Image (cartoon, rainbow, N blue to C red; front, side, top):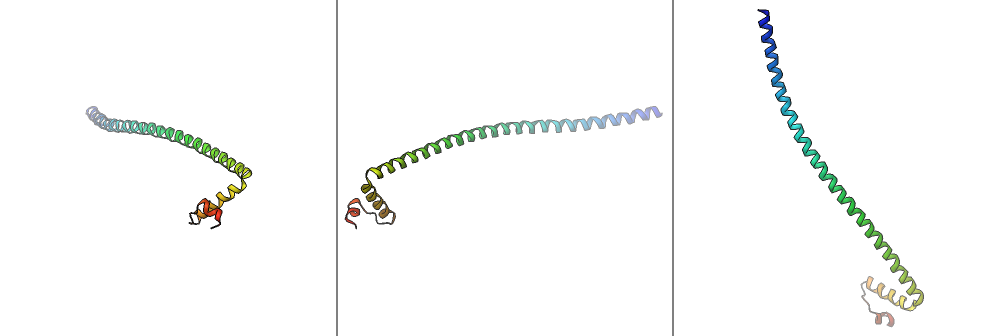
Length: 113
């Protein structure tokens, strides 16, 4: 009698273990799906990061080139002011009048108005 009772207890435990295993199997499948989604998301994020890094590098080069152009233009202006100081003074006066809202022309600057 005790043997049959022990077998029934073992059978109940086996069924309980099978049910727990089913639950764990479902949870494992859900975790694997979530892992796949995360890995795809990480791959997308890595691609976006690489694209942004490439764009940042491109913009840094463009900024550097623009800075070099400013230096060149400043050199041209400095050279012109050494060669033609009167012309540069007139241009500065025109620029100053425009900045103040006067909007003067070269003839206005030469006439002193």
